Length: 422
Image (cartoon, rainbow, N blue to C red):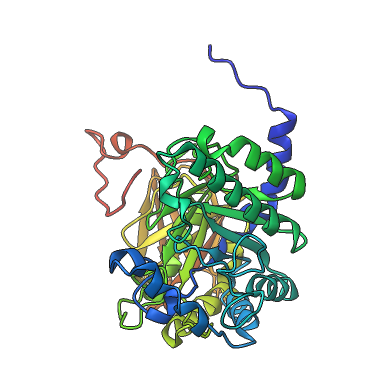
C-alpha cells in the first residue's frame, strides 16, 4: 500500500499564501516597454536584429501618460479581474523602475519616472493583487550572453540580476506575486544561484507567490497559450494573449472574442487553475480600444456569473459539445456556449439533482433523471444570457466524475448522445 506524504509546515505555509490567488481565478498580464513604440511585438530587437545602439534611443521616446496605471487598474477591475502582473523588465533589459544597477531605466531616461511605483500604487488603490514580472534574460547587459561560457561574466551577471530583484522586493511595500520568465541563457539552478535568490525573496516578502521559472519548484506552474486541466496538477495558471501577441502589435486584428475568453476562463476554473489574460498597451500606456471592448463584455458576464468562477472547486465532470461545467460545493454551473434549445440532455449524471435554474434570470428549469442521463425541459427558446448562459444545478451531494464511457456505451444500453468524456 502506498504511503501518503505527511503535510509539513512548509506545505501549510504555501497553502496559506496561495489561498487568495486560488480564490481569484482571473488576472491581467501586461507586456509593456520601449518595444511598444515599435508596435511589432516584444521580441522586435532580436527578431529584427536591431543593434543595441539603434534600439537604445527608444528609451528617450518612452513617455507614458501620467494616468496609465489608473487606466489599467480600473479596466482590470471592470473586467472582473482580481490581480495583475506587469513586466518590470523584459528580455530587452530596459527597467521600468528606479534602479541603482543601470541607467537604462525609465527613471533615468525619457519620462524620468518610476513606472513600477505608479503601477503598484494604482493596483492597491483598486484593491487588486500586485504582481511583478521579471525576465532573467537580458539582451542589453554586456554579460547577458557571455555568462554562459565565461565564469567571471556569470558572477557579474548573476549579481546584477539578484540586486535588481532585491530592489523590487524592497522598495514597493508588499508584493503579491513575483513572476519570473525564461531561465536562459544559464541552464541550471546552481548557475543562477536560484536557492539563494528564492531565500532572499522569501525573507523580504514572506507572503509572496513565486512561479516555477527559477529552475526550482515554485508556488504555481505556468502554461503559455494553452490550458492544461488534467487531474492531480499542482496549483497552475494559464497565461494567454487577448490577440496574437504579448506586446503591443499595431496592425493586429486577430482579437479573441469575448465568448472565447469566457470559455477559456471556465476551462481554467473547471481544472482548478487561474487565467492570466495578456494585454499589450500602446507606448503611452493606453489599452487598445478593441481590448477594452472585449474586457468590458467579459466583465458584464462575470458581474452575473462570477459566483461560478471565483473560488470554484476542481470539477471532474465531463463537458458536452455545447457546455462546460464548473463546480462549487454541491452546485454545478453549466456554461452553455451554444444554446441547446428548449429540451436537451447530458449523459452520465449518477448523483441526485435537486433543482436547476438560469443564473441570470432565476428561471426554474424542468428536469428528469434517467439512468446515467439528465434531461432538461421547459427551457427558453433563445439564450437568456449571451454570449454564454449559465445554468445552476443544485445537487444533493458533491458531484463526482461522470460514468465512464464503457458504462454508458455497454452492450445492452446504448445511449446515443453528443457528450465528451475525459
